Image 1 (cartoon, rainbow, N blue to C red):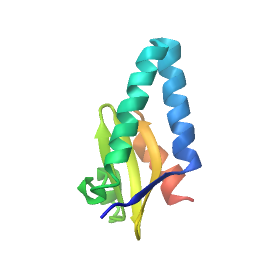
Image 2 (cartoon, one colour):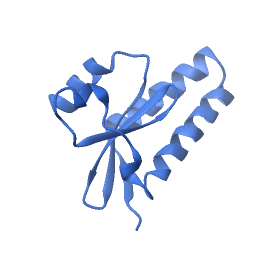
Image 3 (cartoon, rainbow, N blue to C red):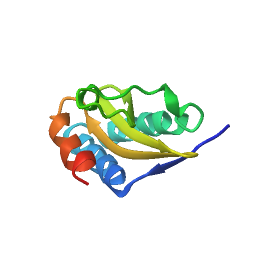
Image 4 (cartoon, rainbow, N blue to C red):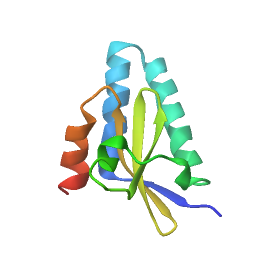
Length: 108
């Protein structure tokens, strides 16, 4: 059973920001490698979307609808609705994820 995987506009913007940052501070080739690895992690969700964990920041609040997978240091947060996986956030795990989650998931 295969699920459709959809990236929200926010998640697409996250990918653009991540790759631009890596290209500027490392190299375009490094940015492409990271983009490929993140894309692979996202694509794998079409087969097993329940494999992710509930983010600890949300678990503390009792919210269990969202899941995450990691490609270190990046965290890919998503929600499964029917037969679709909606990618909501792709962020460097070293950032303040609590603030990102509040702004993007809890207030919107």
